[in-house]
Length: 296
Ligand code: ATP
Ligand code: MG
Image (tube, rainbow, N blue to C red; front, side):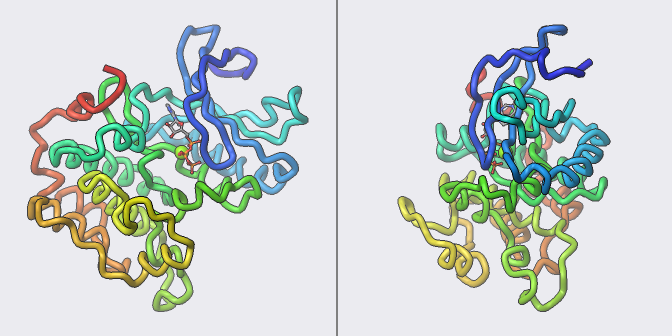
C-alpha cells in the first residue's frame, strides 16, 4: 500500500539521530500513522547507494513482532527541497517512545521491567541472528515501545549506513561507542580471532541492562564526558563492571554473562534466553512496560 512518499503528511518530529531525523507521519490514503526516518547523505549518497540496496533487501525480508518493521524505503524523497541525497525509511510507529526516553524520565526500572526488556531484546536478537543479521547498534534509543507496552528492536542495518558518513556528529559519538564490545573496538588486537559479531550484540545488551538497573551509563561517573581513549580503555580493560549488590543474584549473573570480555566465553543469545533472570518473571505479561511509558 505504500508506494509514494507524497502520500505522507508530516505531523511532528519524533527525534534526531546520527545524520537523520525521525518524523511522525500520516499516510493519507489509509489514515495510518507511521514513523519516517530521513537520512541525509548529500554527495555521499553514492557511497551508500549500493549498500542501501542490500539493506533494503534485508529489511523487506524481515517480519517479526520482535523488531520494528520497515514498510518501505525511498531514495531522494526530498530531491525537490535540497537536491536530494537522502534515504527515507517508512517504519512502524512506536507510540511509547524509546528506552532512552523512559530512562530519562524514570532513572531506574524495577527488576520485573528489566527482565521483560531483556527477554524482548533477546527474542529480537534471536530472530535477527537467525536471519544472519548482526545489529551492531543495540542501545537504549534503538529499543522502542509500542502502544501495548511491547519492546522491539529498531535500526538494524541502518547503523552501518550512517557509520563513516561525514554527517556523523561528535556529540553523538558517546552514544555510538559506549555500548560497543571490546572485540569491535579493537578487532585486530583481540587475540587475532575475529568474532562473527553476534556476541557483540550480547555485550551491548549487558550494558543496557546494567544501565536500566543503576540509572546511568555504567562506566562513566555522572557528569563526566570522557574522551575516546578513556572510554576505550574502560571498555577493554577497566574492572568496573560489577553490578551493585542490591541487584538480585540472577540479575548480577545475567549481566556478568553478557559482559565477558572474551567474546568466545560470553553468554550466547540462546543461553541467556533460558537464563534464570530472563525466566524469573515470565508469568508476568509483557505489558509491564506500559506503566513506565508516556503513552498511557
Ligand atoms: P542513532 O542515529 O545513533 O541511531 P538515535 O537512535 O537516537 O541515534 P534515530 O534512530 O534517528 O536516532 O531516532 C531518533 C529518535 O526518534 C529516537 O530516539 C526515538 O525516540 C524516535 N524514533 C525513532 N524511530 C521511531 C519509531 N519507529 N517510532 C517512534 N519513535 C521513533
Ligand atoms: Mg536509532
